[in-house]
Image 1 (cartoon, each protein chain N blue to C red):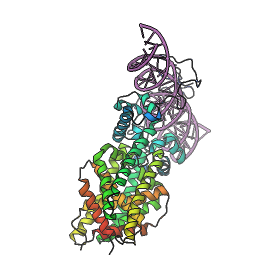
Image 2 (image 1 turned 180 degrees about the vertical axis):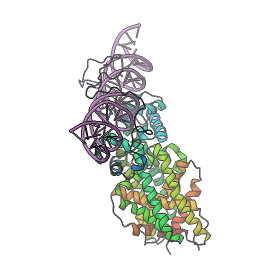
Image 3 (image 1 turned 135 degrees about the horizontal axis):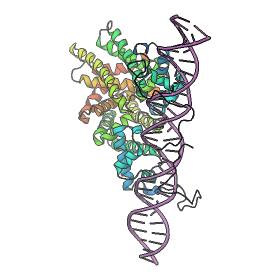
Length: 227
Length: 227
DNA sequence: GGCCGGAATGAATCGCAGTTCATTGTTGGC
DNA sequence: GCCAACAATGAACTGCGATTCATTCCGGCC
């Protein structure tokens, strides 16, 4: 009803809807197995992080992401189900890398204090590794959209869980005070580090991740040390 | 070019653009002085906070806010310049109330420890006072949109400033350690409280603001106490 | 009752942006 | 060279939503 103008340039006809296309499953998408390895896949992901960090998710049209990645708008949909999917994937990958790193280091680092210090340091270093990703984490992940809220909350919970476990072990070993809840400590630690990172991200300040982490953990550990 | 259908229902003509309207300044807006007192003004503000807390700024059409406030879409523009303006106003008011409260209490509360504890408590209590506003603070304020970023950052800075001053005074008086920067302490405190609040907001957990604030400040103050 | 000023309304405008898909390029096998 | 098969393209589609503004409603006044 609305649009009086019909397609004039290209004309679309024949092969109306018949499911006779070759590829069986998804209508038209790069095969699952090839995606992560593909160069364009990565380019799109990187471009999305860049653009979204600059302008915010809702102010980043797919066309802008595509342009930055040097591909056509439609190509994005060859590799991702939707615009949401791009952002979700980017965040997931970052978190998984973080957990992998922590898990790896925990194999050789056994003391609760050292473990907490290590987490703080990696958390703060994320800024240096990929500034755009850090910006994105400090903004979009904070649930500007409900669809991100749900799955990003899951990651947060996992982080807190890891810290809580370390704290609880420290309490059992008599290293940490037992009169403060491990949950409160975990949230305090996460919150403190995160706010420092956040403030650095927004003011563009540069800092030494190791030294800053040390200061924060000095206060915190000092505050929760038993005796 | 695009739209073939022209207005059919109401027809618009005459008085094309001439600036002969009665009210001089803004084209058609409730007089400045009357705004804040007006009942509709407040209704729209409240409705906006509610709706945006539920769905997020970009997923909250003006029409939804208007409906919730029980006014027509156009009425919103009688009281506010734009959709942005509504959100900005709501946030500004909340912060100003917070500062007013803190300032007032500081008149009778002089010890650095007590002052920090009071700030923590008010901060945590904000959840109880207006849950929707708390949600909004934890989400939209975190810069999902650049236009909010700029002015909300200003508020954050002010908060940190207040805490820093208290910490510095505590250091001068020899109550707090001097080997940790007041800035780091301020960010830690803000971050810790904020994260606790955030987590409560998202999980829907209920907590006792006074007791929780006490625990957090116990750890923090214990961590920064001199001697 | 008729008129006036201003508040309120909500349909229409208009531009934008997510997604689709007919068409075009490219590659490798014959 | 020719022909699949498949990746890539980008114009067109479509629906949504911020904002405008001609029109209606309302209260006070003559």
